[in-house]
Image 1 (cartoon, one colour):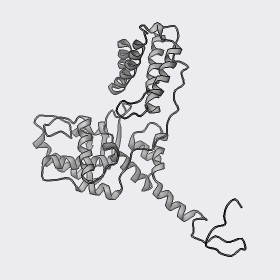
Image 2 (cartoon, one colour):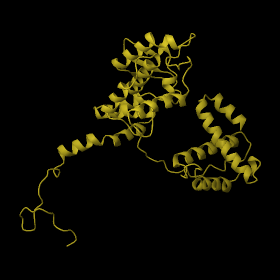
Image 3 (tube, helix red, strand yellow):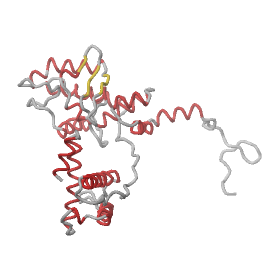
Image 4 (spheres, one colour):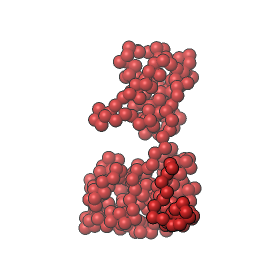
Length: 319
């Protein structure tokens, strides 16, 4: 297993993906050990299928809920890739997971998003009298204006902002891909105010990281999530999500403002357009308005009775 992860690092797999693969493969190995399977030669198609069934029946000890289908597919995909590599390296004669059927992909709506009014309420709730407050306002504005991911905001460096052209360079985002996204004038103004008035009081070295904690260190993902969640809770937002909610909010409001999917795909850094298309399910407000204007049966007209006269109630069905 260690050699396998060296192989992934040599092929430039991201540390985050390797961590997930390590968890998935380690989980399977632990499951095998509990059933007396001690070597890779003892792993059979039947044992992989049994593991697949165990994932289906597994329940979270805290919530009592089953593992999501996407998570099961991730576990099984990691095992199949590892066993396939073992086969290529000559450790086993055939991949016992080659024909294993992965669960069908679920098409889920993104997490909840905020209305325009709620966003403005959120931004206006920040106390701007402290360096941390100026930083927090700049963070919220950046999330809302650029729709970048949490990890991408944490990794931003001072040179990643083009203040004249209002652009932000995302370096090595998801999939290890660079991209450039636009940022609004208001968000850039708050970032500049934070950089000039607040960041010098927080940073104690020559760090190039833009957003830092009160101790001058880069944010840990969970700390940034807690920070954004605190502001959301403060204005009464109890919907699930925090940093990603602002990403979904920006994408949804842009789509409702007539942004095309291709442009939105580039901005969000999605590999496939199918990933971006899920946001079309959220624009029900716009769809309802189109339905009202275009559907010939929308108008409030009284149904006719059997004699051709207008009546208060539609005819009873089934008679």
